[in-house]
Length: 373
Image (cartoon, rainbow, N blue to C red; front, side, top):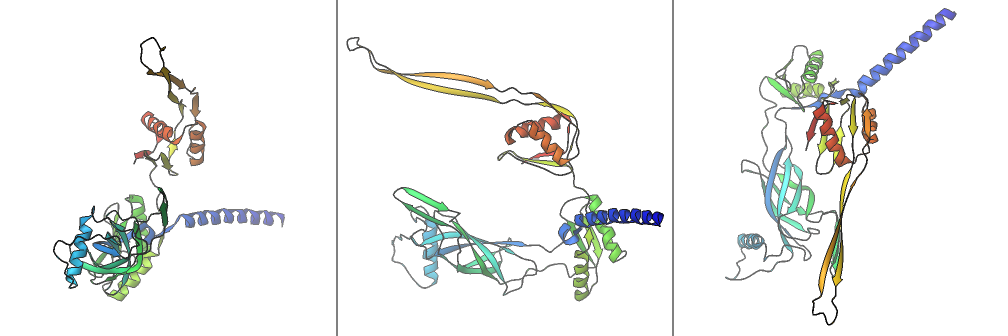
């Protein structure tokens, strides 16, 4: 009985380890819809020029934005209102804006989409304004939607006696469901024998795994075109094709480990690295050099009978301070936590860390692609 109990315990340990590995693999698995998109199923950008009215004195200063006045004159003319010749308009409650929107795939006439309204003049705020009927055009110049509605600006501001306080951004707002689709964009998903999955990033290993996963569900239907495109034979009937794509999109695939990469933002000093980064043994010395310039202004005042003139003298004192930079030994590591700990031990700020990473890459100690954005 003791031997049987020991075997059972050993089997339980092995099963627990295998279950842990399966859970780990399942946690890393992603659906095909998260890894790729169907070719032809995409958004289309729309843009239009419009007028926002009803502002509480926070509109464009028309002397500096003549296009706002011209737009109002044209709009009133289309409505049968003729202004006297030479009439100058001083508008404070009107602002010229650009209206942008994304037309989703399979959008049909009558469907409502969200729009963003942004001032292009010198309006102080669009809060409380109403967008007048605005056509939204695509890249081909055709009108695909019409926009109108009350602009919602998430922010507030106040000014007085030379002081000004602003919370959030006041010259841009949003209208939920503010545009109505007038024309549909034809897609190619329902036509042809094949549909194509486009991976979000080029990876030959992940592409091969996607092909294998699809062929397990529909044998012989998928093949890899290149490192990013997968061709799948789909049913011709529309109902069957939709159901087929629904099944494929929910297939779980464990993607290959991404390439080692370090992203450096030189403007903000941000440094981001992924789990695949490797670091070879190296020695790093880092010291900060600071230069300070102090100016002591003094006045030279001659005696009353000396006949001289009062003069201002500037005495500059320049100091150079260089902090000691000890030579730090960084060990080989493939663990992201150890790499971060080693870089923090150097005591460099984010801006200095950029220079250190570039030097490590040049020395061959940083086994990753270094990209500066």
